[in-house]
Structures are given as C-alpha cells and as structure tokens.
Length: 448
Image (tube, one colour):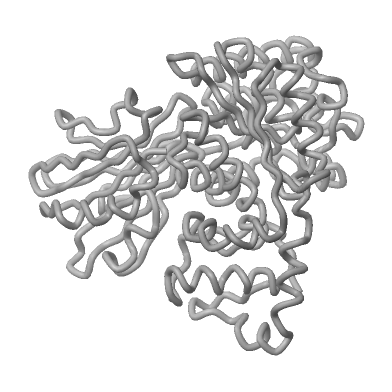
C-alpha cells in the first residue's frame, strides 16, 4: 500500500522527507516529493501501484489508490491541501496541526507524532481542507431489491467477479490470503478464472482448521499454495513489529493481526498484491452473534459494523500488507459490490439460521461443499491462535500490576491483561500518549 505525507501552507522538503522515512515500508519501489505554492507533498509506493499514479506533479496530487476503490489523496492548490478518503476507509489517512496551525497529513500516525500537536483520523467518505470537514459519501440503508433470490445471487456473482478481475495484475500473476473460509475462498475461486498464475497463502498452528480448509480450496482452484506453520514463540517474537505497524493495542485487533502479519510476509516473497476477504462478514451477516438478534435490528447492526471496519479489520489488512510492501485488494468493498450488497434483503443474508446465505448461493458449485458451507471462525480462531496470547498474558502479568497499570493517561481503561501486554509494547514504541482519539477499539471487546 502506498504511503503519502505532506504539509500545507509552507514548503518544507526536509520535514516531508522525514515523514516519508517513517512510511518507507509502505513503498519500497519508489519515492517522490513535489513542491507547489505554499506546500510540499510526497509519496512512497510499491511496484504493484506504480501504474496508479501515486504522484502527479501536474495536478499537485499524491495518492494511495487501487482498483478495489481504496483511496487516500491529497491535492495542493494555492497553499491549501484538500484531503480525501474513500467511502469505507480502506486506505488510512490522518492529519494534525503544528503549533503554528500548519496542517500536516500522513498515511500512518507514526509519521505525525512529534510533528503535530494532536493527531486526528480523517473519517471515511470525508474531505478536509484544513478548515472545513465535509462528508461526500454516507454509508446508509438503501431500498431493498425486489428481485428473486436466484437473480440476486447471479448479479452478486457478476459484480464480485468484475471486482476481482479489475484487481488482477497486468502480468496475470495474482495472490490471495486464504483462510479456507467462505469469503477468501470466494475470491480465490473467482481469481482462478482470470489469473494466469494464482498463489494462495495460509498461516496457522499445526493442526489448525484454517490450514486444512485452505489446502482443500487451493487444490480445487489449481493454485500454487504456500503455508506457514507457527508456534506461540513465533507469535510472541513478532508482537513488537506487529504493534509498531498496527498502531493499536486493541486486544482482538492485535490478536488477529499477528497471524495476518505473518501471512503477509509469506505472500510478499512471491507476489506484489493479494486478495483479502474483509467486508464479507459485515455486508452479508457472517458473524454467529447475528443469528440471535431480532431480524428488525439486523440491518442497522450490519451498517454499524461496516462503518467500523476502517479502524478494525481494514486497519489490520492495511498495516499487515504495508509492513511488507504488499498491496491488499478488498474486492468485497468494491463500489459496485458494496452498493448492491447494501440493497440485498436481510432475509437473504441470514436465512434459516445460515449466515451469508445469498453469498453461498452466488458461489455454489465453485468450491468444495465443505468450504462452501463452513461456519464463520474469526481469523485468529481458525488459525489456531485461540486464547494462547491471552493465556500468556495471564501467566506473566500479576493482578497487582494490572490494577496499577490499567488506567491510561488519555483516560481510557484497559480491559484485560492481554490488552495491557500489548499496551506495554505500544508505549515502548510511541510513549504514553495523552490523546488516542484516532485509535479505534473493537465493539464488544472482552472485559475483565
């Protein structure tokens, strides 16, 4: 994923170069800084994004953009920068003001710390010019489709297929993270129809269910499959790297990011971009807890968790990929797929207790039956991580230490010893920050 950074109101190439230095992992293929009237913009990018015009000196624009609709963009005109972020927040973007009021921005928080007084996240679907923050897109409920289930399934398949096709690299060599769940398997099934060569990647502890399902799906699709077996020691070893890149200590987010980080590193050894299945559970009612909710509450709940994706699952995907100079395509959040999914009746998403029923119908016959009908498991559960990290925290942090350290300078309170374990690492990287308003926390996270 490309990285962008800059300053409005003044030219300061040295400052922007320093900010880009902290984003270097996001763009090992290239770097460029441009200056205009009263501003300096810069970007780093990957080989996979070289054709997406990360820097346009004529229009004074830098961007992190992709065929799946992800966009973080900054345009300079007459000393004023206009920041724009895509509708669901696939691409990250943060900003802040220096002591003299000068606006700075960056793809990651780490490049702004020590530069601005406070950091703010640009909300998805918004633009900001340093003074006015305005929405240009609102993720809202849409009128339900009136077509039959077979017609809706066929159209959903067509849109997903087009979204996947648009992200296949020019050389035809594609990659996909593959958990063996429905979402990632659907993308693999579709990508196998368009790619000249398809690589799939899975990670987990020995004997984890994800590995078995992923092998089955990869063989079915004719993909070149790669897997990584890990131990609890491997997870603990990479925790500092994961938390540095993730910029979060949210327990469930870190837990799922550890395995995602490892599989991203594996993928980067073979391909420049991968497909990732984020958005499928939120758009098509994939979580088990949804089965117990009254049907009238479900549309609102799906909207809520989709709106939260930008600093939970999408943050995990972005940072895990970017840490290894990799691009991740989230085809379920392609604009045409997103628009259609929002109009599918809830009765077709959760039907007779079967989550993601309409997606299963759309993909019927294109994957093994066991994969097609597999129940949802969270990324860290399917990989076999389970509660290993939480158990390690419980065994190494005393009750007294937890009570003494759970209150943070920003006023937050840590929920569990596992979260404290992650916060200690976070604090080692970034210090005791008094403002964490830019950091999301998982809805319904476990508490003591």
